[in-house]
Length: 427
Image 1 (cartoon, helix red, strand yellow):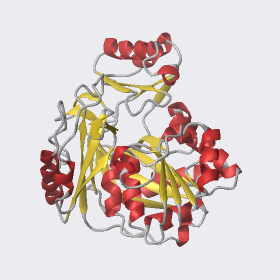
Image 2 (cartoon, helix red, strand yellow):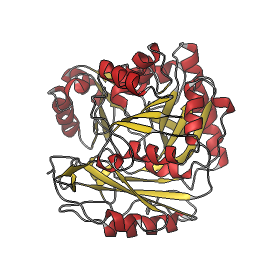
Image 3 (cartoon, one colour):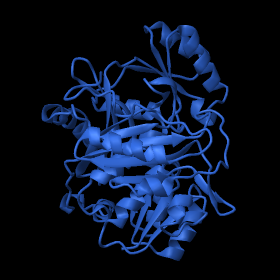
Image 4 (cartoon, one colour):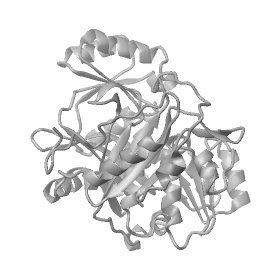
């Protein structure tokens, strides 16, 4: 099987590594890829949001399976264009991708199908925002409606802070994504992520995970695309898993079916478990999460390529599917200043030493080659991922790997997975 993968981040590097373990995989091509992936597989500098460019590349490579990693091309209908020309694609079409492309669309979908989520108001003007805030108590949740690379959410402690955040979004902080906003009730509780795969009929879950969005230790500072993750979530028991499936996963699948929305790809459920133990949806994503994927895929114990091909062909029910009883931790190294402005072109050292450690791998997110040297090229630069028989073992291995790597201004959180009490919920 030859595979074409679209994307350039740590998630896609994790997918490459998982595909490499599949015995039936021959050639893997990536577009556009990054410096780390280019050392392992052919990369093509193509604009993956351009349907015509993607059709041309797919025609030249003739892959057996196309996997679309990020949300951008999915929301622009690249999967539809490829399928129209006969390609087998893992990734929803434009209609299904609206579940991530528009938060107001997703919330309305949840409301129609009785899927538990926070109460919300859709706002298109400052006066709408003021009216929505007046109905609520702090903290206030303000969300840009469209895609914002995981950064379009502000949790404000005062009305003034909330109105300032809304004004910034309306003024173009996130481009067109901020022209419509959501004001939501704040949901207290413990977050977790379930990454699933569905062909529209069958839905399979990967290991549960939890990411760390804030840039600083102790969940302080601004939201980021993700500073690290661990899997599985130790306090997710069989009873809660069954409740999530009954109240959220199955109603979502039935909703897609009832609205005749074809869906073959990953479906991400960002969940909040309230203090009363009730699961609610924070958000949908229509692709594998980043950085959750980096922690989850090392725990998949079957043929990953075969499973994704079966999904893309509408045959997921027949695909082998098992999860290893192990633990994984992903620590993200970022450039100085992220998620704000940051420098690029900073030389990186120590990756080979980190990867020489048993059960440790380094996945590239924002790297490039400059004059033959590996340098930084993005905000999130590297993911150091480790596995272990226990969560504590995976944490210790991941941070030993981090200690090997160096670049000027490198930043990472020192508390990834460490806020979990042994045998219990987050402390």
